[in-house]
Length: 299
Image (cartoon, rainbow, N blue to C red):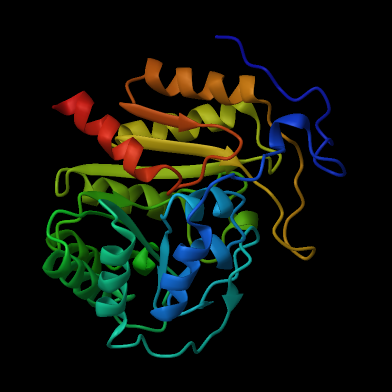
């Protein structure tokens, strides 16, 4: 299969290539979305992680909720979310505030993600279950996708989450095996695969994703896709890493749209049911459309 690498591996230092320029959304509900989030005192990964898709998603009245605070107990090299060894306790009324926002936004599919909470015995698992319960009580037809930390490998905590029965369980592998110690903090490549394998068959769909542009080789990305296939992942997302702050990891390369398509085709060729790959792809980007596509595949 053809593998196309960026013509200039150092293109990431300096001007963005043409495929990373986006037009501003025209007619939008951007300010309505922001108003609902502010009213309910909620955080989103869109803001905290400086997602390049924020304007588009908010203009379409969708957002990915970031729960259990805005401070993470890990300091990953790619992420702009604030670090704290002792973040505040999860707020007891956060589940109902999220449920109210889901209803106000009219979300038919919602993505809930979290900061890593290594300070909590269950990693925040019970809080996630309470959020799911609040959403289902308020809007029973809304499907739920959870994007979690690795819960420090706590299998009981994972079981707690899975027994809450989210439609999609998502845990990102983030990068290739070789670069994991530099890109991620505390999380390991093998532990991510183990958590995904444990979740397989216990919820409807399993999802994981990674970023490219850290200096990985094509063959290394293929190996990640193969490893995710081996543990039963149904949906794989691959997107371009963009440096969120000056002190975070540098972009080593801007991967071309053609190479992203090669990754997509490779995943499909080895049996991954759904590959979503592109410069702006993120774990929760167009999550509802991805979920609908999976329902079409499996009926």
